[in-house]
Length: 80
Image (cartoon, rainbow, N blue to C red; front, side, top):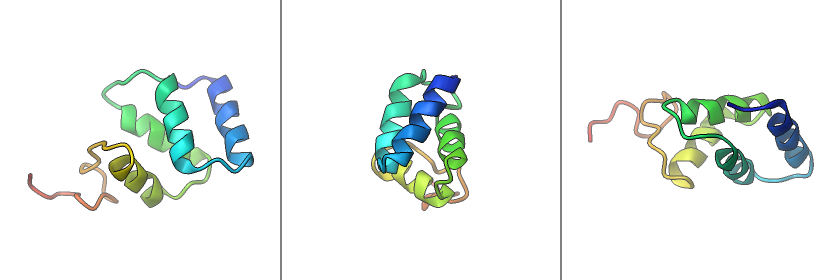
């Protein structure tokens, strides 16, 4: 769950020019890993006006999360 305080901190970090990876790293340390962990991060980063494709790529390549379920993933619908 993302609290209002976390949302405000994320917005402040973005205003300070922090990178998408920095913000994802921050939020991932503040929320519990749940089944919809990636969706929570995706939703919060989109609310900060980051591009959805950029978010998915960052989650895949910088954080090694499996985003193959997401239509913007380079691995979308690929068999493993």
